Length: 375
Image 1 (spheres, rainbow, N blue to C red):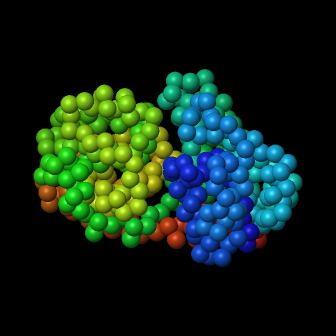
Image 2 (spheres, one colour):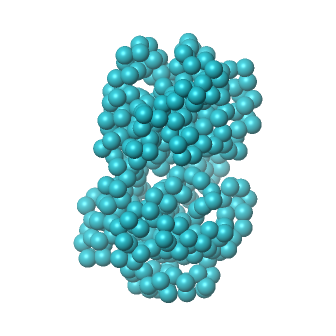
Image 3 (cartoon, helix red, strand yellow):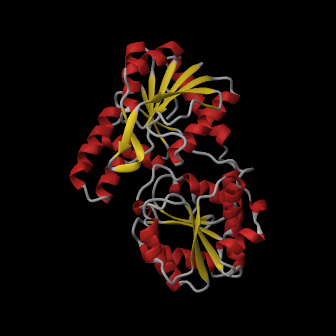
């Protein structure tokens, strides 16, 4: 099987979409699937044995970390020379729309996967006049493909309600060996807690962006005695957050990757995630694999992953009172905290990336054989 992937963002940028793209390429290499990836031109030529077909572009004025790309006939010729059997577009905008067009020209099937809720993003950033056009465009674009893939049952049901006709699930996984309680580390806990290692360390991992609503964690620190917050990551909202949390026990830990990131997860006590919207939320599974109970807003895959009162709690977006109560429930006694962490780890162990990626390959094979993949 020969697969052409399309993405609007790729290395050296690091985000959830890039992570899934890289994991997909790594798995395809292990399975002997020949792959190219069509992505913004940023100097990367190859990853996990797959050629990177770079598309020229410019910085996105609305999202400085991203790029607006302009596929051209040269892009098409390079894809055609690869002779793909199937194309897969990660949330098509510019690169992905070209992928849909190229697939029609080459008469190969195309799958579209959902990774970014543009309609909710428009609403959150107070450009509400774009919300309905974004939702309409998502429906129209995703119906251009032969099949659509949602990362969670919540997103699947929303796409179906919007009128997307054929929507299956491409669930997300975790490397439960890479993220594991054994990485708990005294030095890392000292770093995250600024030396107050006996306190309850609340952890957030991800971009420091407005839509993550990290400010909502302030009432937790103010109302739950003995709690501290560690923020792992960086982003455009960091300066505002530093001002918002001034004088409170908050550690800005910066970007961490690899084993330091695994140690950060395992050395905390509770993972907190008050985001306004997500397509899935990979960090939830990484935290659970590390043995942390999770308190998350009901976004993305949170309700697929968290068993209420067993491995964590979910709360309605912007329900800060429920967020505070959930953290209180978990930390009120050490035995409860430990039991919920064990339950979180047990669930994560059943969500392996190889299994989820093999489900994607099964989907490709069903489409290529003219069958409807299981929804």
